[in-house]
Length: 367
Ligand code: G3I
Image 1: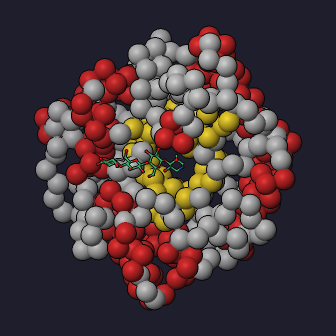
Image 2: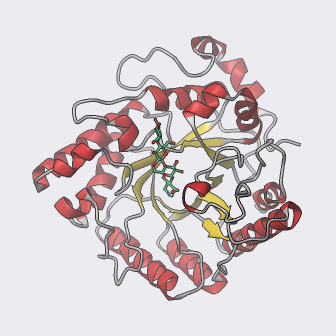
Image 3: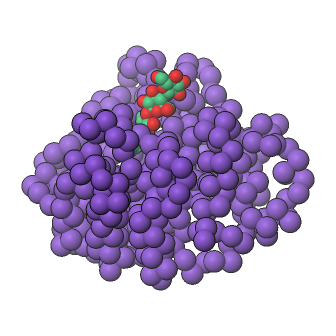
């Protein structure tokens, strides 16, 4: 059974004309926001929506993968195509082709798109290093957000406005990860990015996305403490923010800190902030090689995490950082010593369902 079977039919009935535009996302774009018509809510509203990070090149070149995304995802998030590095090869240029292709594809198939990401230390083009003053940094950040968010207004209802703001082992909310934004604007870059996004699209859900807050140990406890302090400081200054994204790049060899995580979630809830699971996968490079055993251990880690989360909050959605082991970032940093492929995602490289798929399906129904 695939995760989603109904709304595509429902959507296509409404937008036959849009489908004519593109086989896979080469629609003509005019004016500021060519994707203005909001999508109809899907009939399966009592399920926690599921989605995955996708890659424009794989969607274009791999029909079976594209079919698997259509069959299983209610949301997609561009893995890299909405990052500064892809959008802004030079200061005076915006390259929207790849991002547009994903948004077109999603619209044709009744799938919602998440935006990732507007203010991050990573995936920044080299020219941003030459940003020399506070005023220049503010102008560039605001211009980028206004241009990108206005283009996708109505088509991208939620944005990871802020991604990974904290250093690895923070002492406080002020322990920001080094970036041109933190260097030139200090903690103010968070307020500027969030206020600008809200000003451009007052309906957009604004998310602050972070990782390594799920595990047991002093570094992770320090990250949870600093994250809550940061969220409180934004709340205290009435900075617009709607949700926290838990990336959930889980490590099969790290214990989930159930109490620490649930305390974090309770405090987030008390700040009237929603929770999204934004980039779930299970890094398996330390696990035994045997496939059956490894897949079961991967599913077990995700189950413990989702159980701890869903006991305290109902995530707005559960997204994995990729759908199939065929396309995953994990081997970039966590290649297995035995040379076997990593298996961190719900579908294997043959697009077959794994125990992790069933675990996610089980928790989606927990509403
Ligand atoms: O598109 C270029 C291609 O033209 C070029 O030939 C190729 C060779 O260098 O690079 C391609 O760009 C790569 C891009 O992924 C697209 O595949 C970049 O080098 C590579 O650095 C980039 O890595 C991405 C990384 O973020 C940095 O943006 C990973 O795929 C992506 O999974 C990873 O995602 C991050 C989230 O944004 C934030 N949370 C952690 C997560 C995993 O690190």
